[in-house]
Image 1 (cartoon, rainbow, N blue to C red):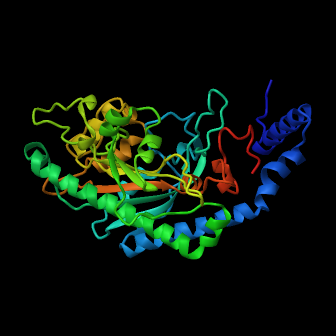
Image 2 (image 1 turned 45 degrees about the vertical axis):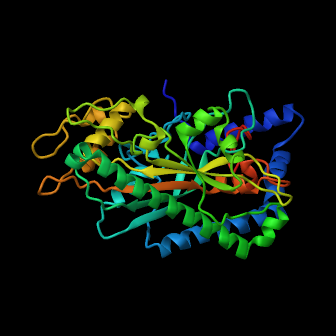
Image 3 (image 1 turned 90 degrees about the vertical axis):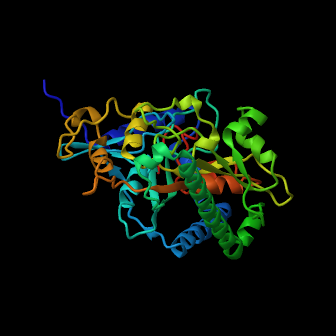
Length: 415
């Protein structure tokens, strides 16, 4: 017996019919659901003020990056490989097309690396698409900070240090000094971007902040910096962002040195004898990445708990370290095997990472790696808005979006 697969619109219609019946059994209706969850919000003065803040904020941050000499990159929504992420998602969406399965973008981290091969540019930025199918809370709680479909302002900057493997292995003091200097440059760039964004908000949408019952206090001094392992020793690991926020008056602060993604730089890592240090041995002074955390502040001075809104870091740049980190993090099951031409021989075992690793392992005519030294980061626009605007009118991250898709907010996203 032959069965005919149903087209997507038929399947959607069937799902909506079941959803409508489920609502009716609970004394509601699809019309009531749309009115309550969408129409009332779309027509609200609150969302108007949020949108004014968003517009000024994004424009101010992007203007700053343009003034810094960075170039705008196109969005990459689907590819063969995406950020594997250090945290769990429900699954990675795939899109079959012309005989291949493409994956949707967790983040544009690998695209940013590849774009920075261009030696003429200082760096790039992009309004990056992100689809992360966050699991629902197992206890049925409403978590205010997650969206499965969100916008991220992604940035990557070339460091241009030309540090080769011999220096990496044999001159740890000199290399560490360079990395610390570049870490300072990275924090300065992202602090400047943040200041520029909120200065524009205060200038163009200050009355909207007032209408939402919140305020922004940009500190005159540089943003405070906490080192993760040192903060854990002082405050404990539970609810650490909140405790660090309570320890500083500043609405904005950095956390440095979180053991996280495979591409975030740790040093010293590789050894001359071919071995590498165990990941558990590293302290935050040897992990060259960072988070930007932000507290909300209401007009009366009441603050809400600090939340991470930006993550980034200096990146692994040597081919040997890139491969070792991918292996250590379980992203690839085995190292690439190259023939004398640089062609990967075990392509099938590497999944979608074969093309990326071909580039990462490429060398110039003198045998020097071509992979760029960079630092970068990505700031979640909706999370930043929610973090800062929490107060009398903004409670959950859905409140700062027209089409927000919080995994804890509804069983079906209608728009």
